[in-house]
Every structure is written in C-alpha cells, then in structure tokens.
Image (tube, rainbow, N blue to C red; front, side, top):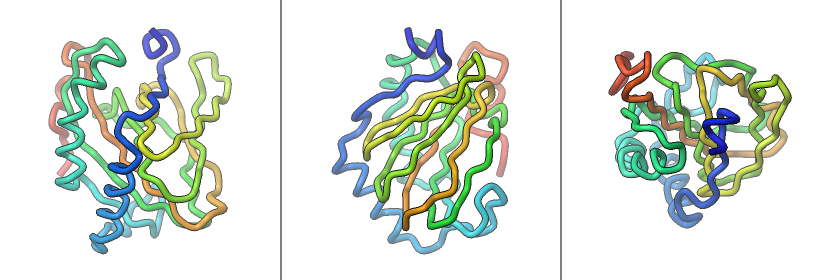
Length: 173
C-alpha cells in the first residue's frame, strides 16, 4: 500500500470536479475568512467551516479505505490563496496525523513534500483530487504563488489506535 510504505498517496477524483468547484464558490461567497493566519498572512482562512466539516465526515470511510487505517476526524481548515502567497516548509501538529489536501480549484499550484528518504516530491492536483499524507511526519510546503487565486481544504484525522487519538474532534478552540 502506497500510504503505508511512502507516508503519502495521491487520490484522483476523491470528489467530483463539479463538487470541488462548488466548494470553491462557497468559500468565495463567505467573505468572512480569518485574515490573521500566521502561516499565510492575509489570505482568507476558514477553521472548521460547517460545509467542510460535513464533507470531512462524509469522506472518512473513503479515506480509511484508501490508507487502511481506522480514523477519528479532528478538524478542517480551508484557505483561499492569492498571488505571492507562500506556504513555508513545516510539519503539522498532533491533530494532523493523517492530513488531506483537497484541491477546490482556481489556478494550478503544486504542493511539495519530503518523502521518508527526504527526497522532494512535487504533487500536482486537479479540482477534486487529494493528497493524503502523514502531516506530522512529512515536511510539506508550497513555493511562491505566481497566479491569482487557489482554493484548498485541509481535512485532518488521527489513527483511532495511535498515539494522537487524544486529539479526536480537535483540541484547539
């Protein structure tokens, strides 16, 4: 299994392109995104948006099937990136043991990660595609965004029987 061996797996069409674009429109219509996210300053961000939370719950069985683990959901976080944004290299906190980056459309923007041998891996997604990865283990980032806008939702889970199960349903308010 790719996820077990490599710590990441690309899933094409986790949701339909049409649905992904509708979620993108949903984020754009909100107009109330947090602008104080220190990771990407000035880009609208949405912590545990109700629509995204429902999709996170709906996708849970599919994610479990893809990676062969039983999971608890923790939280979701959506962001509308804009020109000149940079997502610096980082690892995620304990509540992000299994992370999903789901492309919601906009201009193309690659995500990078360091595999378990510390080789850089470039991942290109289309709307509806997802990268499932071990967010606490693998460093990941995006270089400077040269286009106009890109939407992503990050859905985070933990192994039901793993050391981070205590973060079920998230610990941060």
